[in-house]
Amino acid sequence: MTDHILTGATGFVGSHLLADLLSDDTTGSVYALARGNSRHSAVERVHKALEVAGHDLAHDRRRMTVVESELTEPLCGVAPGSTPRGDGPLVFWHLAASLQWRRGLRERVFRTNVDGTRHALELAASLGADLFVYVSTAYTCGTLHGDVPEALHRPPAFSNVYEESKNAAEHLVAEFGGPRSLILRPSVVVGTSHDHRPSGSYTGLYGYLSELRKFREMLGDSDESVRFTADRSTRISFIPVDHVVEDSRAIVEAELTTPRRSIYHVSARSESAVGEFTDYMLKLLGLEDRLFIVDDAFEDPSTLERFFAKRIEFFADYLRREKRFVRSVGPERSLPFHELTRFIDAESTL
Image 1: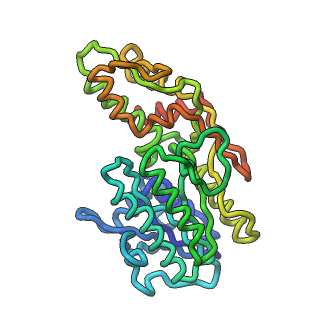
Image 2 (image 1 turned 90 degrees about the horizontal axis):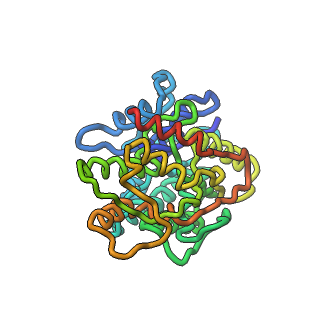
Image 3 (image 1 turned 60 degrees about the horizontal axis):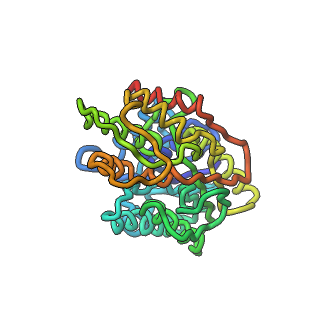
């Protein structure tokens, strides 16, 4: 049986991957690397993340060992011997990352996402891992758009420091002389296909919806309307988290048997258009007569328009440039607009 070590077990995709590994009878030992905080221990945080992910089978967790760790320290702060090696293959999954993106946080983000990846690689090498799996993002392509290949990117620019740091970490993984590595790139991940609930996510689709909701609250009784720039026809690749886990595990199992390539997109077709899902959100929030998409930049924005543009700064490039992620292995995934509305509705009822 294959043993697994993973960082990022308290995060969105990490908690769902951990739940899937624990529910699989063919999985060996599972080591979840996590850190405690001032309120909760590492064990408590991992168990809470599993609950949010919908995993409630306590007996499955007997195969899991939570290891106190700190990503920014050498070897992730893991003491020797705390993750004993079994007889089968060992896969090291690295999912932990900072999702911060504002320019003023660049040094902190790089310390977590790049230095932390180096520490994880060194730990995997010291443990004799058979495969190091780096879960990155499809958006390491930066401002490149159109058809995006499964290859390392050197784009002319990035939309934000998060993309830049994940791109730098990919190059580090590719150049590191340790265990064989694999880079997996999910696109925009939403909740589960089973019940459509966010199940631990607060970014991407949900971050955009949250900003619209906060702006509605800020508008209050004001009757002022606000314009913002986007391309209504731009389509975005959304994929449910359980599909990401299912496809990632299938890729890893295949690569353990027969190595083929080192980078895979874990994505769906770019299908849901910005205009469609934004209009749906605005109507849901009662903002259809208050917020308006315009195609081109406009002169003399109002104070509210400048404020709103700042609030959705992270999403601006994604709303204007279509990226179609080339995918070399199946199954083909698709999340059309009519299905995406179920994820929006499920978040709005929480």
